[in-house]
Length: 478
Ligand SMILES: Cc1cc2nc3c(=O)[nH]c(=O)nc-3n(C[C@H](O)[C@H](O)[C@H](O)COP(=O)(O)OP(=O)(O)OC[C@H]3O[C@@H](n4cnc5c(N)ncnc54)[C@H](O)[C@@H]3O)c2cc1C
Ligand code: SF4
Image 1 (cartoon, rainbow, N blue to C red):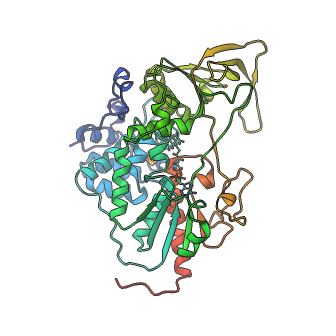
Image 2 (spheres, rainbow, N blue to C red):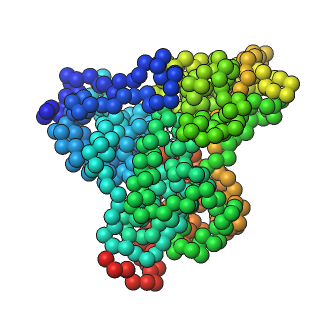
């Protein structure tokens, strides 16, 4: 057992091994191997146990990172799991897909010149070990309460809230228009970042804990929002953001130009063994095609890497700024480069060429101008710099906006911001409609899983408070 901390001075950073790119390209399995016990303990021992842990400050969940690193070093993994799961409902998921370089690890303060502690990988290891050893148990509330909550959306925000409220003994019903639990964890994020079994394992555990899932139920469609409100003492809206940003220009309506989420959902469904006609007929399958993905965020990275695995003839990512200004995580850009994706920096589409189907993207070179009020450099096209890229499949990965929730739910009094996100009172998490709360991407706009978990937890605490204040029935028998 490694007993001492501060080992960063003699032990270099070592992430769990990445499978070779040539192998990764051939399947959809996660790219990082598991830590073994000695390696996890050794890497955790690099932590300097500093007085003000900036990793914790910059983790949206304020995870008690130094403590669980120390316990991992000492081989006390069950205790490490208890501490880690006290602040995070899904640590094994965050350990896999948080952009740690921008959050905890990016703020690790071990001496300059030494690489950060591999916090995410250790977090993942602790909870995977806990599952392997049966330490992760379904919820058993100390007392059952008669009041019920209806949660719309089984993504990480809705699920974190559901778990917290169920722990408190409330009757929790989660409604989702998808046929599986997980939201973007299942249908957006590809398996090479997060294998689906990890999400399914949580789904089953939540179900065993008494949370009732109503899947394939579109609120605002087959079931009205009004009827849902009538059935529950409180409602949480955690519906995420799903309206793809569009692209204009000549030829933008040609066949073969597809939204990123349609493409990724088809790939995820195919991986789960579903029948996907648009994948089978080739419309949403990159096999043998020249693929151009437009955008520079994490969704674009997921698309290019999916296309590589589907056996595309070539995969290019077209981004109007340069590498240093990409919004996506550098770790993902590096992974994509290793897997053979070609980045065309400082280039933006002007037109899409073809008769009925797209066969090329006409792009122009861009240059970066002066920073605007937000500090971001403006982009301007360089005159006469056009060039064509062959493309049989163009994927638009330009981001997401909220759907029109007040119209979708036929509830005009739901106030929205100018971006269409739901307005809440940031203390109570309540929307403009009494007893209706909101959390996750539908409030923040497209964000991160860890923020959705944080919002779900905070909203649950406020819903519980509201329910206590509005309880009309006594607490049921213990
Ligand atoms: C391609 C892609 C890759 C990403 N990669 C990462 C990553 O690597 N790391 C990271 O931290 N974040 C990533 N994100 C962002 C992350 O997935 C989201 O921030 C997070 O899932 C938001 O959680 P949520 O619970 O608010 O919403 P969602 O996960 O979107 O869940 C919302 C749920 O609500 C359901 N719903 C919506 N409307 C209705 C309705 N009317 N009736 C019933 N159900 C409804 C939806 O079906 C869905 O299941 C990625 C996003 C995308 C699109
Ligand atoms: S939840 Fe995310 S940010 Fe927080 S410690 Fe884990 S990996 Fe880091």
